[in-house]
Image (cartoon, rainbow, N blue to C red):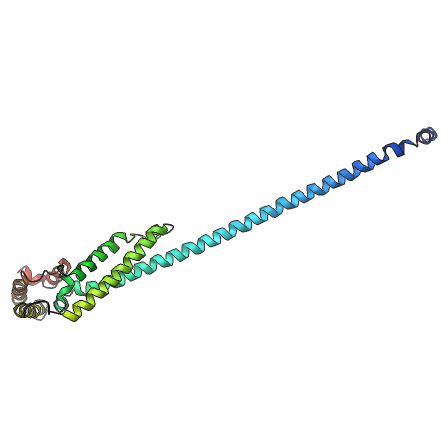
Length: 230
């Protein structure tokens, strides 16, 4: 121990030579440690920000999907509503004969309505979920349904305004007779023979005057199936 103290005592001046270097090294190590801590904290902060951004993006995506789902559902609902209004004519030939313009394809408004319906039907998704994410398809379908609604309302309003006025007096009388005969043909209280005869006579009255929609004919024949096959 005494020898060590003597040695240190002999070389005490080295402290002034290397003291600054050692102090600088210690200080440098401290700064490096602080920087490592800062880098770890920065990485942690960036990771947290990334997680938050991903969560927000996912939430926004879910919101967008739900919005799209509601929009597509709304378009399909409007489509169904107009279809139901049209089917009330198509499936009820007696009512249809009050507004024959609804099936008269010679009328521009009627032709416009049927073209608009065809396009809306063509763009309608079999499964609305398949349209999610396809903004262009959604827009095209929504616009087609809107055009269908407008075209139907215009055609219906004009058909109700005109009623049978687009036909001559003799043609109007034939429509009235055909309407009366169709009522009898679908009257379950009439005999099969009466119903069958009424249907044939109604068909003759309408021949060359007005073509009933296929669905209307099918509905008539369904209701008088027993008489038609007799």
